[in-house]
Length: 211
Ligand code: T5A
Image (cartoon, rainbow, N blue to C red; front, side):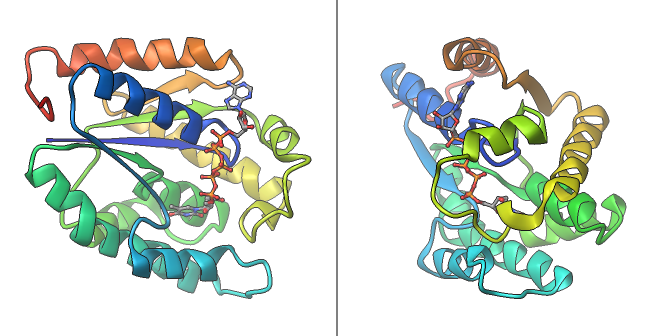
């Protein structure tokens, strides 16, 4: 059983890389499911709508709890059962997003407190590998340009996203074995190749998720 997560600023290319990895793993014979955060269940998708609607004013602590509520439901209803049956689960964002966006971005809570809180929310589930796709907030804003209206989190401003980026760097420095940093300014296929190489090493010798 393996939980693989993708992290980074909005527009860093996480969804693109998660999709490419899922395709590659399926071709290699693995059973793979993709989920996204916040979302992935009826309840979590409803919470997502609340969180991302730019018309909503949500207090920072309520925001932390809502992202975590969506995650608790996703883990209980989908992720843990899938892992239990041997499926590889690729998750677009997980609790590192809360540490980076609410912990660092909102300046809400110290990471030590968040660590314990995340484990309560997920029933102790921690990703086996996390790919952090690193781009600058300026590059992220550039990539989002021309898309539809910014959602509530994207509209939080550049200083906020600078603090989020610092949060991710802090996480990568603290947990280098789990959090692998990839230079997200490179070509999509080069990043995908690095991820595949790492996954191949991780899965070699194991039978996780292979049908
Ligand atoms: N949030 C989430 C919190 O604050 N706390 C939490 O606990 C959680 C879970 C979610 C928002 O909620 C926040 C974070 C977010 O602000 P979302 O709509 O799910 O919102 O947004 P994102 O996860 O940011 O998803 P995006 O689709 O915006 O970005 P991705 O997935 O990083 O990027 P992707 O793959 O869609 O690519 C974006 C564009 O860049 C291009 C793609 O083709 C696409 O056009 N691209 C590249 N271009 C050049 N070079 C590359 N290497 C490229 N890779 C992709």
